[in-house]
Image (tube, rainbow, N blue to C red; front, side, top):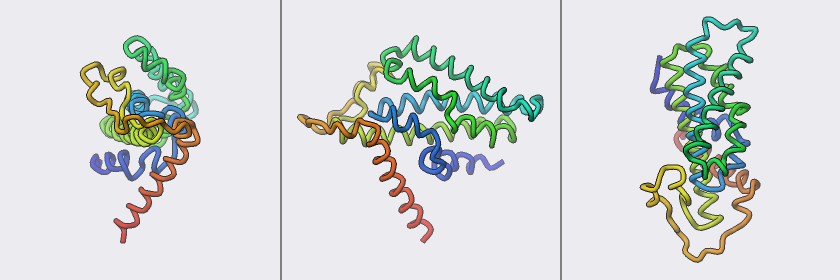
Length: 211
């Protein structure tokens, strides 16, 4: 098993957002700031890793006819635990992301990795795939959120202390003091715009590497 290739696939070659174009609902909805993107990405990573490991562990005991309902039940259980944990320990962030945390259950990326990879691979490989895919998804949401936040409000990682704790308040940077903001960048259409520009940059980078 080539763990290096699995990691590279998750972070870049088959990135959930920039290559597979999955999970676009949370990508458009919650990336109004870098902190929101990071929080949603980390929550999805926890679900991805746990569901991948559980699916790989039970793959020899689940009939092919009922595998999808079983996978969805496992994913829903993990999402419920993450949702309740955020509500308990990160309530301010939960008030922003709470609606979309529940939607991780129907995130195509999570069920897709369970069906296409974890159900066919041993637990260690499924674990590495879940971590790599989750971190790739987190990076994509964070980058999109940072671009939208910078252009929309002139700040970076605003309210990061709500997610990471007071000691990470240094991450909250005002890049453009006195900036009036651009309303469009915090609306969903800006998510499509920023995603399109980043996709174009990724494709150009890929063509230069092949040349």
